[in-house]
Image (spheres, chains in turn cyan, blue):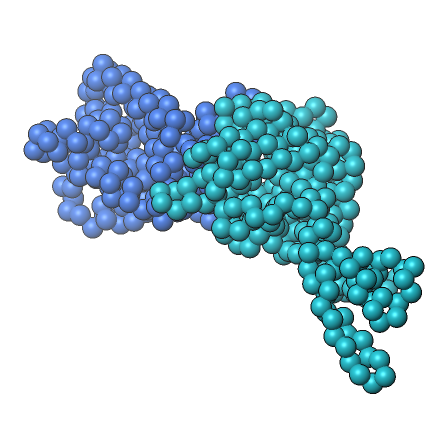
Length: 281
Length: 245
């Protein structure tokens, strides 16, 4: 495990921001932390990167204590805060170069060129950040997090306020990073995004209420199936589990050799992207 | 030290590209010195213009350097860039020293501009030696003000939190540091409070130089106190700059 927390808690006076969080994140995975605003996602990430001191419990990232061994740890992690956290008067390039210099990266110029190309901002590299759109600023912020080839990325709502096209591109990038062995801990409050994670921790009021694979969580939902037979409508509520759906449909004449039925729903994001892509062709 | 240089370079290039900060650091002091000239012109012929002109110029630099540095650093905290600097591996001391380096050129320009305008507009004539010492005093005071700004910013989460420091730390210098009346004429307690303020020592040097028969030891001692004040603030600021909450 590259991240382990035990009973990790943070309180401000009588207010508990994080309560006994137990987390185990394996290497090379995309681990989502899903929750509404104020659920404790940012508090958790800030504790993992050593910006917040735990009130109780323990935390280890890459086997290091994020407070005591922060200088060693920070060489090996990438952090993208919720706000874009950029120097608005400086160019895209200068922002990434500055973070690269902090890490004392050799051949920084080449590395920065690669990163700028990677985040798709080559034509805007010399523009001041305050001339960019919100989504582009997010890309610069991601570029800053990429500069030191981190082993773990902590991305706090990386695609909030980003258009669907860029969101998909960002997720392609996250997948590529995970495939190369990096671990990504991503906080989000967007359900569609959460489905793309390998594993999901659902947070509410400072606590982790469920840790599961997204598909398994989906199967815990209930489907409403309506069928019309001889002008009579039958509505059945059935678990979203494909086997349970098949079993229910057997009662309505589905051949018993069909063991599972999975009903896929196109989501709005897919439809919008298809429309945009067909226009661009 | 290398990392401090990177920060200094970044701070300077940001200051030069931000029109708002440029106005506050260079245009505002020029305008205020012009207002000082109007005030002095409206006074009777017997008004000792030299007694007030250079000290007021120094005070304007002190006030604006403090304000500028405090605002910029608090904005770093509010926008999250300070947090990002920490996670990228910059240490507290490298950030404090980096800021000092970044302001080094700006305060030098500020001190030259303010002193030149004051002497030209008010029509003051001093030897090169005295002018150089005036410059060094104002420059040193500006650097201490930058340190004071960094120190104050460590207690603020947003720019409005800087406001209480203005009446508490900067404005008392107007009354307690010998700018309007000699500190010896103040009640003992007020004189002692004035000794806690860095402007007192800069003003003592300027007053000493204005006598035309200056005591080199007194000037030297005040410079030492001013440097000590700056170093002390730098150490304090690097300890109070919050890296973790």
